[in-house]
Image (cartoon, rainbow, N blue to C red; front, side, top):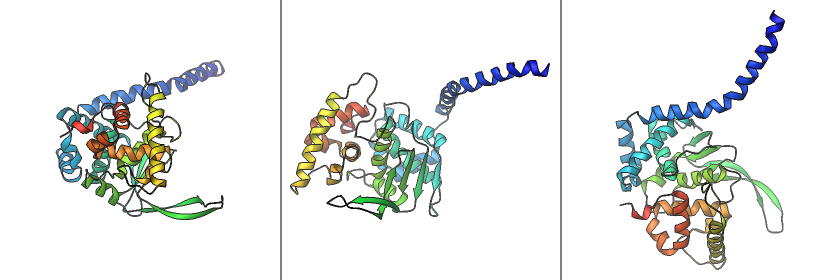
Length: 276
């Protein structure tokens, strides 16, 4: 009898294995719906007031939406301290709030994100650099942030604090690295994040390609401009750099680069130039 039941048991186990991936989104939606009913902690509001002044500009509906995104982010994404960095609500809320600005009106989350690693300050990584003539050598480089294609975002806590403290300097390492994360969620980082099922990339490619080429020409000529020279590194860095400007200096970016601003407005589905 045991032998007769064995094939049936194997079939049941096989069906359960096939059904499990389908059940995960259902369980996630249920968990997120339950989380949305939990009030935003009072202590977290205090952290936002102290640490992320950009939140004060948001209209009331977007501020509420941001709080929901922050709750979901913290519930779903592990934060790991490195090199002695302690992880507490101050760290989680400060970083999550800046990252979740990119999710307003987009829905979902950073689907490929697996963890956030936090160092006290700049951290060193090994990099292979190519010199003129094609000669390569490996060296250590200090970074304030990095987004790995395999799903981790690495941040300097001091730089995350500094980026949040001045929301009008156009520099924000958290926005920069999570723009990379959006870019990486649907393939390699190439400066073309997911724009939606009904959106073509022709106009995006035309406008951003034109602006990227113009920036490279300005950098080569030694000219200053609103978009930093680092954006001329490659299309992925260009997208991350202009994303920082989009949220921190939206009026300046809109006035100086209206076509670029229009593409970012459609991608991010918000208009920070209207926030007070």
